[in-house]
Length: 446
Image (tube, helix red, strand yellow):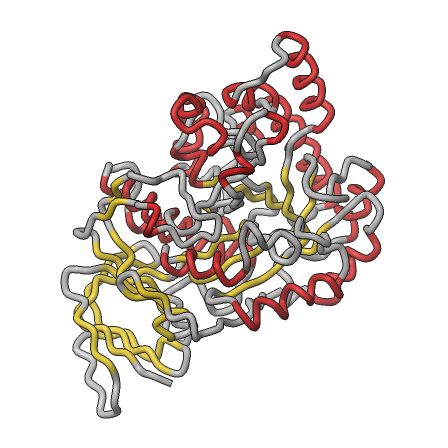
């Protein structure tokens, strides 16, 4: 296996930026020090003027395989992920068939083992009817990232609105429970009321239908179940100011039993952008009024919100067209999530240390990922080399998603991902992806 020595690089890690050398070999970080010299053959990389971060870990993606591969595959989207500095992902169960038992879950692991360029894990799905099967994950707590509950409707038989099922899962599950929290009853009521007023709905109606109240009520229910049973709950893609009152920031992340995620599109877009981008930014939960974005940023920096993710959910452009009912919800994001946060660093909104904490350290800590998420000797060499002085503009030709488009087309980012290492392998360099490499399954210290 090829060894690499990165010289004179600014390492962003565990709250500090330090000028060091780093030696990579045998999948791992072998040494971090000043003025490292080696006798064995290795490739030396000049890191002067650049920054090295631990690879980002995305705890929520939809890579669409199996069953929806006209939109995306594990290979195509992991390719886009490593080009954007994401070296590990956790993928959702609403593929076709839904991943509702261990056999179907392991089928996805087999696909990833053969084709993924980024490290991977997959959530077990829950329906109103498979609680006993879903709880089989208790026997696999070290090699499955968690259970996923859709408390708002999704693909197939994935809506869980039966409180007996919820109570059983929350009382008996021994690993992390991740929830999509939107109240289906309120959403249907809002839709019918608005449809009675205006038969032809528009993109800007989406946050009125899937409104803050629907998010709050569902998140409250999830938290009540978790508090009742002392469950390990992680609420995905918080999108509203109102929900933030449900969370606190008064304890270290490692001590929290209830954690929360925010996604990059809710930190960037607002309801004002529907006029420009239309159904391209239709997603669930909806992108809402600007005060929500401002509140999310404050909560992120105040540690009320624990991690940053993408909820990457690609659809073909023809699937994002009107009418409202036919326009699919979700947008592709993994290639540009880290560059977007570097844009906000350049804007003075967030520090490099905090970007690393929220996209790498905190995700590893939240999910108890084994030997990843930090730049430490002996840890897997999942690393991203950043050039803060190399702007780039997103063009259709540069987009690596299988769906072929991005909501950031023509947007100029001020910094670039120059190189991405996964398990010590250089899988991306200056626009070129090494498609010959496959990555590894994530494991967990539980």
